[in-house]
Image (cartoon, rainbow, N blue to C red; front, side, top):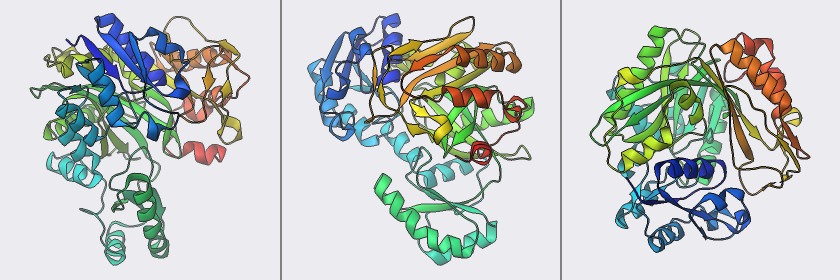
Length: 447
């Protein structure tokens, strides 16, 4: 096992990694920007080092500064968390060149799966269903029109190098497609420095279901079942739950096996998530692989009792994955709400500022993952995530009731948060009956 690692991230995920390392006897070096200098979680790290000003481009995205800090503190490995450099193949190569382990998959795997067109090809070779669409990048508008006519409207124009819900446009007819292609390429180039796009059939009212996997360096790969992430706003996940209420046992088994096949085909190691769309006929289609730990990983941890962060470290250190597929069991139902400093009832308007009042709910089966408390400041310069509220109960009905109770107990002020919106959402008849899809929030609440 490593003796010392560097955490190349901030906030909630940095706090989570520090906690896992402390329990494993691993020292931590936590980098921070000038904006985060007073963050409470830094006091729990063994060493801290400032790597630049508030702007991520001058701090958390500066691979050279992070590598320099790692070399100064003589660390064995770097944990990227999620976001920032977590899926940056060039940074992984920098780590490798500096003889520092990267806690995640290889640069080659990240590069392969980061190209959505190549990832689709890989999935097809692994006999995993993909959404009907172009076989590769769309080179000209006439080609796009021909493909769209074949698969039928509406279609989605997607950035080949995209992720996180960005670089996506929907076209409902030929005229709409022609006018949107150029915009999609420009948006993709600006966001990802890659203007390449491809086309997929737009699946009407789908659910978003993802499978958590773990794989070691010898190719031993297992799944830890699925998470349902269908409650989204503008492709950003709000509430996640497991198991998915939409899956029967047969479909669940097929879905999870498909996720394992994709990862084996990609020579994947460490933790990862394979994402799928589930249509109204219960057919599923591969979307992409997220080559990092997910924000919503606690859902799987509570469902299975497996500590994903600790396994990330063990696998990166070269230890074999001692868990067999038969060892992984589901228990009860889990729901997670992402609590952000946004006014959910007013179009999710950002509400940064200093937290003065702070009361966290508790009780049996309640987990709160966060890096803040009374006196903490939520900066407008970073993601507005305050923390993640997770509840685990024997049944989904009990989990919903527990979540509603916890949201009512929660107090954060004077900044606005998404807590009141989630309270409304968790008591909505459509959510309770699980009659939802990825467009539910937009249609129901107009946001």
